[in-house]
Length: 421
Image 1 (cartoon, rainbow, N blue to C red):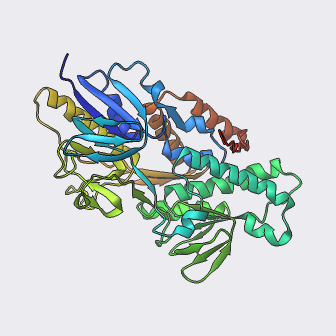
Image 2: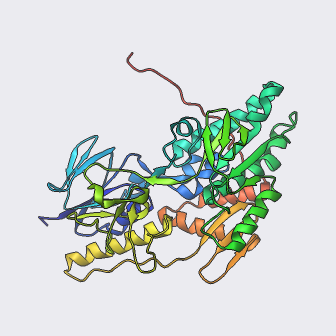
Image 3: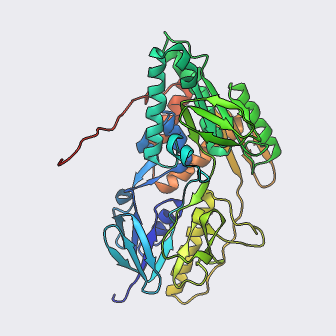
């Protein structure tokens, strides 16, 4: 069949991946472009950083997902710019023409313009960053064995900045590591001085969640020994000292930055289409306003609806739903049928703080504790299964749950090999 339309999708996150999957075996040629050859499962990144899951458990090779696809092709490249007039996408490997362009490349860590923090703090948005952080955490425990007494406390102070789900989950995982794993791994070292701080600028951790969940999650964290400081703004970090806005200082060699995200940018998208948080303004069909045939999905898309006048939450379920609706609309277009408008139906939000400690907010009610924890596990398992049938993750989880241990504390350092010098 000649004259097939080509859809180019930029980014293989939850939105881009789902759109490509839903457009399999249609009369479109689909090109999925990402800078990595895998989909990274963001919600479990903190478990990689704390050596609870191996990186392969949260990374799904794209070519494997689309092995049997007749019309979806994969290219690994950096996207440089878009020329909307000539319908061309410039990338690091080639220029690609498109009939429809869908931008779904998500967000990156927001350092709020502070280059010092950017230089010294550890982000955790990608699999390589999570592995880097894992190495750093494991190396810190080794260093603690030989550290000078004067150095020891700053080495043993872990500061997590940002009290959203990522920060809360990471702080909880570090606290569990201190309690369950370090005494077994290092019987000759007293790790009681290991201190985990969680710093949050707003008055509560898990700010968008219900008051009950905010209070309970804080209580869980404090029971695990985490020092939670809310209404606390970080002014600076120089690699050794965290300076807070109230002039307080915390000596720390390990600062993990989970304090916010900002959209990735793309040359060729007009300035007037970019709104706060660097998100692209889209209409109810996820089409970028005033650009022909260019769409945006997921975290990068800013859509105002009567229910969400300030845009939708930047979570996986929004990205997946938007992709599903857009896929339906692309299919309807082939049959000249009418298009569906998007509206988010909030299924709730959740966070896990530790074993049997989680909080779940559903639209009508919220609950905490053991049932919430099992709910959290089930929902994440379902999310993973929607990407790839990975039972191994569930088995891993169950094993470390009953065992209170994980066997993944392997320090893997990169080799700096200079080729052809």
